[in-house]
Every structure is written in C-alpha cells, then in structure tokens.
Image (cartoon, rainbow, N blue to C red; front, side, top):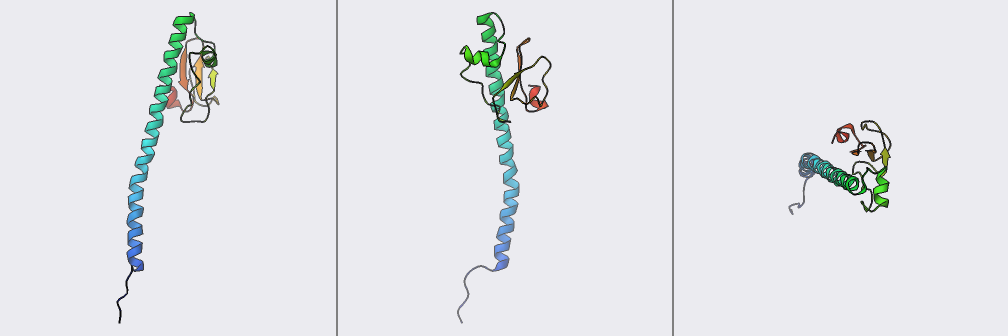
Length: 125
C-alpha cells in the first residue's frame, strides 16, 4: 500500500492558529506606527503654518484675517490637510480651540493662534 502524502486537517488547523496569533501581535504595531506618522505630519503642518503667520505679521504689519488670505498673498501654497480628518478648511474663531467646529483647523485672527480641530488633545498642541 502506498503512503499518503499531504497534510492532515489537524496540521492545517495548527498552522492557521499560529498565523492568527502572529497577526494579532503584529497588526496593532502597524496601527500605532500609522497614528505616530499622522501625529508627526500634523505637528509639521502646525509648525509650518504658525511660522508663516509670524512671517506674514512681520512683513504686512498685522495678522492675516484668514488663513486663506495667506494663500491669496502667497505666504502659503495651499492650506495643508489635517491628517486626522478630511479637509483643509480653517475656521476663524475668537475663543480657545475646542474639538468639533466642523473644520480641519481653527485660527484666531486676533491672537494669531492656529490649532488643529480634530481632537482636544491635538487642539492643545
């Protein structure tokens, strides 16, 4: 009689379980890396726009009335994306930043403060 070749059902199930355990360990690490990359991008965007606001203030003698005015006056090529929410719009606000104004960014034209509007944690940056 010829010996059977191939894997048994038990062997296949063991391999599948091991792969599942490995995936459960590895996938959360990629999720953390994605969040860290978005946070780094957000911080870079905030820093760049805040620098341009200060440059605008020095050159023009006043703060811009809106962030779009900085694009119009060619201080910014465009308003950058907020990596945590869809959109580039910047609301002009007169109060400290809070999450949920429906925009990607908050800008206080009176003080020149510029913040992310996707979470209270990011608004504090």
